[in-house]
Image (cartoon, rainbow, N blue to C red; front, side, top):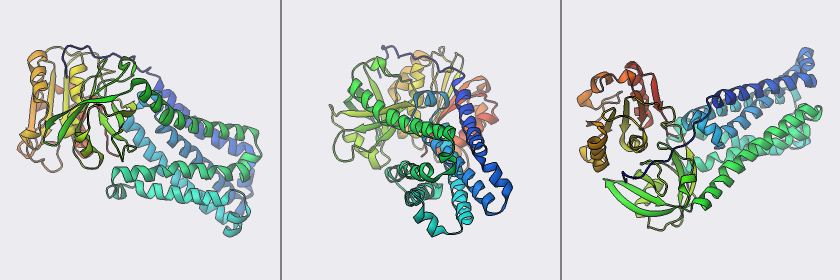
Length: 444
């Protein structure tokens, strides 16, 4: 990475965005419950018997639908939402709302079947119910493959393709609600709310998952400039394009990349910038982990690139100066290296704790040496097999973070690496009294 170019600076995210988003999500559930009561369902509940069972089933179905649409919005890549919460937090909430909405949907189906007694008649006689049954099957498939045990057995590309059926499931469930749902037919306010929510969810997906990436890819016209070996199975890709000063990206963020180099180009892969964004140059560094990452080393200069992003909150947006500690493991060093180039810390105020199995796995020797000479960055390599249940190698098992980085409790601490390693490193940082902790997890 060149040392003379000036990194791009971006506007800060307003502090109130996160609170506003959380309040809006909670209000939506209250609105659903209020519309259910206003539609006369409270009277059905008081009537008891199968009428009450059906009323409760409708409420569960409405809450499930609301959460499904919120789930879509969480990962619709809305820039304001991404900047306010960060990708890892949104992914956790996406999983929570997904499993919660699925459980409510199962209860909805069970109670409606009990309330109507004739399951076959319910499916065949009511408009949209066959579509709803197909949508339910799609959502069952998505939920089952989202369980951790199932995800471990799937390639990322296969899991991602199956996960797209969630959109199909939500879409197929819409007609039966609009055509036969008592809470839709009898209330103009309910119809207005649900049509608006469906339109916002669909519009967000089409705008931010399709239109915006295509527009940015066309506007910036990124092409591969150079592919450079960094270490065993590790390559950097330098990319040049147009008007990159207008690309709203910060050091530490990542994009979803599609390289137009032949069959398989449509599968996107998440790679972080490994250097600060410059006015004419971006850089990513990729480790050969199989699947799509293996082909990156064979990219040729001039290859066109499609991008989605930028995403992520592992940035220096909240940094106001003072000591910095980076805890990196393996390829997780890439966004942290970008931050070391970008953050305006004073000479000698930064420490990089770099975890790797072998010395040859430590990448970016020249850049780290330059940062050590010119900015006083202190490198703490941690080499060797990892100790069981620890973020440290066996040679350092039991060593507190305060022994590796004196005074770390007062530092800004950034953590990036494999998911289980990150969890262990975060625990160590909290045990050391760190309060300004920044992390983003990329496990799918």
